[in-house]
Length: 62
Image (cartoon, rainbow, N blue to C red):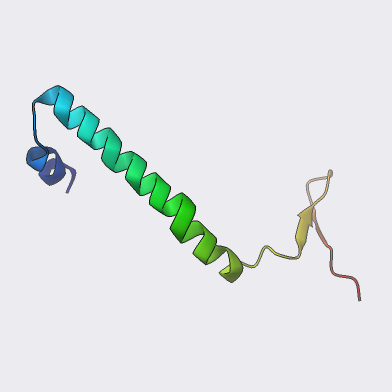
């Protein structure tokens, strides 16, 4: 897959390196601003707080 992307990017080595950096930055931005915020409510970490001792304490009061 990476070889296919590398072979289809335009330009010589400098152009391919810049194109690769742009593709990588786009993938990171997509994950950071779209995928992770969408998935956050689905993760079970809302009610857990890590204490200084390294353990997890439930912050929900009953």
